[in-house]
Length: 357
Image 1 (tube, rainbow, N blue to C red):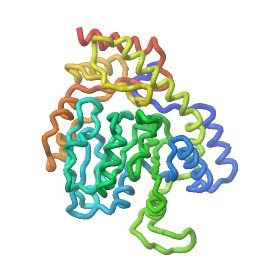
Image 2: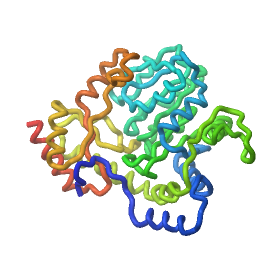
Image 3: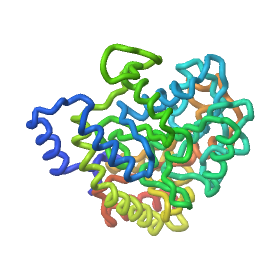
Image 4: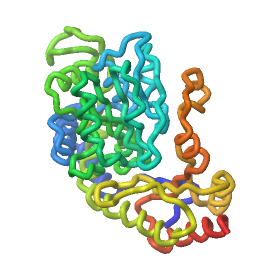
């Protein structure tokens, strides 16, 4: 069913409602406690990460990761040109200076060959779950040079590398989003994963006001309140149980779009053996006109991210990003809500075909 003017509705039903009601009626702590630990354990089991920490959002998760990396005022850090502004804004808040790096023309991930040597911290974004095939070797090489690699995996829960390693678990830290438009949701929320015990301890302290002990008011590091709630976790636990089925449907949606838009629109290269695309992306001429046509029919869609260099706030750090610029001019996210069926996708594709004719 096409939901009017929405390109990505959250998926939930009676299981989530019953779980939340049961938790409320149990007189639970509401704040972060045992339900949050249960959800974190599920994320570890699913991704293979050793440690998981739920936070208020992926945005605060990226800020927390920047705090763990100890980005200093005036320090340069590298970030992909094709990403959401939140990827780098936490590091900017800490006084860091973004070096905006263009993307490679296949995966539209950061071009590893263009990362400057003087950047100690690197933000790598797996937009729509995509990485280049050699991403593990590239991230490993950076870490062996003493770099800190933070993966913005907000859109990548359920996506893997060609070696079956989950996005978000390759670098020093990975951050997933559980916002409403993502593959699963807790309304708002995020999760930081890591395989490093010391980093895990620091994340735990930073998200908990800077406390490094569980009892008493002892603050050994700079921290804030990035804590999750058990109320949200009670919603997220049944969401995690549905994740395998959502992944299958997301991939089927992508196949349907490719079937009906063959020779009509260019698709960003996506290997469905490993990647779970949150949103089907197409590259098409007169993108903005097509978006207007779709919305006039009550079909939600969204332009892809423009290069960070073209964002009003980030222009002061402008570099040359021709690949990301072209993607920002032509890229469009098509509807991807879970209740879409093949006849819905065909209707959407008919409008795209008429536009392209």
